[in-house]
Image (tube, rainbow, N blue to C red; front, side, top):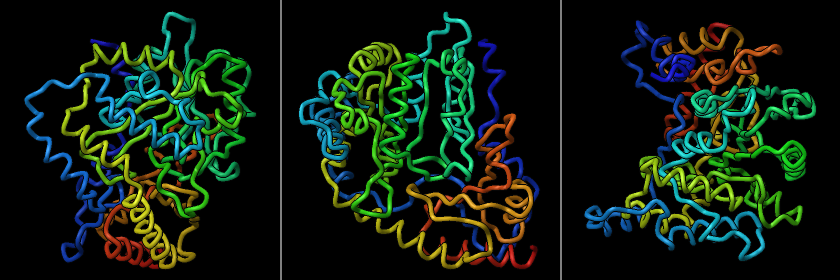
Length: 400
C-alpha cells in the first residue's frame, strides 16, 4: 500500500461526527446543519430539463476532452466574466471539463508535482480545503501552510515567505474567494503572485469555486486569468483556474466544472486525465452548457444569499465577534472558548451543527488560525438560517 496514505488526517466531517457522538440534543428542536457547504437553493429548471432531454446519451461513452460546445461555453463565460481579450482563451487547447473541482484539484497536483526533485513542496492557505493537503501528500510533496489571520484580512502574507520556501515550491494553491473566510484577493495581489511564480518557477492553481457568490453586483471578485490579462499576458503562463457549477448554479450533485489556463499545463493535465478515467457523462455536459450560458439564475442566487447574510448578522448582533465576508456563503466568527467545545455544546443544547475552525487548519509555529473560530455555511433556507442565528445568540447569551 502507498505509505503516504498513513500521513493523511481524518476529513473534517469525520472529526465532527466523532465530536458529536453521544450528544443528545433537544428532541423538540429540529436539526439545522450549517456545517457543510452544500447549496440548498433550487437548481435552475432549464438545466434539469437539458439533462433529462439527453438521458438517452447514457448509452454512449463520453470523451475526456468533452463536447466542443461545453468547452466553448466555459471559454466564453470566462472571457466575459474576467474581461479577457476575446480569442485568447482557446476552447480547443486551454479548457478542460471536469467532474467537479474536488476531483480535479486532487488530480491536478499529481500532474504538477515532480517528486523526483529534492524536497518538492505545495504551498497553500491555512485554513484550507483539505483536498489541497491530501493531494500534495499523495503526490510525494510537502504541504506548506501559510496562515491567513484577521490581521492580514484573512489573506496569506506572501511577503513573509522565505526565499528558500519559494525555491522548493512547485505549486501554490490560492482559494479566491477563500474557504472558510470569504476573503478576496485583489488584482494587484494576484499580479504580485504571478511575478513570484515567474521568479521562482512554480504553478499557481486558483480555486475560484466561490467567485460568483458576492454582494456588490458592480464589483465581482477578480480572477487569476484576469490578473494575467491586466499584465498583458494572454498566454496565462503558469496559471490555472478551477471553476464549478456547484455553488454558482446550485448543482453540487451534477459534479461539473472546468479547468482553464496555460496551454502547456492543460495539455499535460489532459494527457493524465485520458488515463484517469474521468470523462463527464453527455447528459451532464448538456446541463452544464445550459448553466454556463445563463446568468439570470446566478444573479437571483446571489440575492438569496444577501438576504440570509443580512438577517443572520442582524440577529447575531454583537453576541459573537463576526464580520460580513467579502464573498462566499460562510461566516467565520470567533468563539469565547475552544471551537470544538463551542461546536459540541451548541449542538447538544440547540441542535445546530457548525464546523470547528481548527478542523479546517493546521497548527504552525504561529499557531492554528482556525482555533477559536467556527465555520457557518448559510446554505439552509432563510427561515432555518434565522432560527439557527436566534439559537446561537441565545446559546451565547446564556453561557457567556
